[in-house]
Length: 184
Image 1 (cartoon, rainbow, N blue to C red):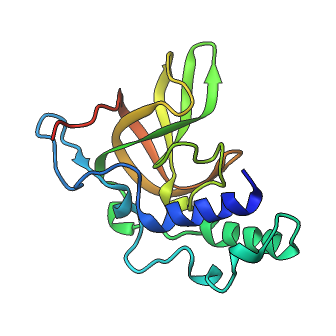
Image 2 (cartoon, one colour; image 1 turned 60 degrees about the vertical axis):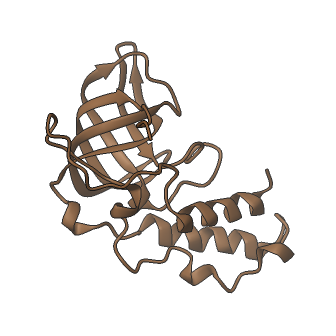
């Protein structure tokens, strides 16, 4: 995929909502964690593409210096993406894809949770307010890159700069479970 197409894809995904279709707000009586949608992580009124609208991706090639400038500007805006302060300290459950950060022989200890397949790996990372840095109390075997999971725990608004992307949230995981879509 060309560099320009990667930027265009990242802009489309960031401005169109998360890949998981869910209502959000429902609480599981058994778990005590409120189901959270990815859209709820973004403060009302924040527009990740506002400063980049004047750029016409259709006329740029990967060799165009404007493309590199656009990516630099996009990363600056997205790496400083505001979080939703109302969620700081909330007990939540959210689905997403695993992007491994720390793996040992004992298993995976830390990962980024992202809203769509390929984020941070095949495309530019999403905005920081669409990445959750998950830390598990003990290493877990059997998890792989891009596994789909539910993560439950206390969400904190805390920036973390990792090799795979900048996250705006952090969660000490109380539970990590395979994602199973609800029956309709």
